[in-house]
Length: 108
Image (cartoon, rainbow, N blue to C red):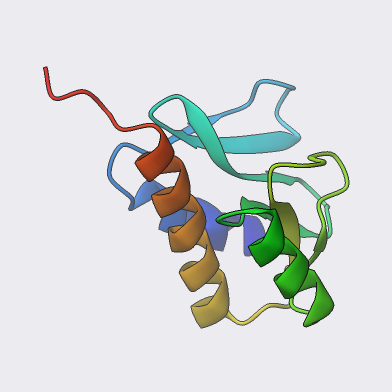
């Protein structure tokens, strides 16, 4: 159920594409070819990119997120599935915007 929520919201973002690079048990969402969200089926939550390492540490110290277990460095954190839908949408959008700003899509 949580995974479907994340998939629906991520799919609504312009240019977002879902990949399964490690098989069907792991979903990776990318924009402009770069990952902004990931989860594993039966996992503890959704891994998202914070704007930087300081923002990630702040989210962790506030108890809103934990260090992403498989994505060390680069400001990655894991939001538990128990995070409210509104807050999860907010952080998905922030992650998407961060990645999109760092990797603009060319306007060919």
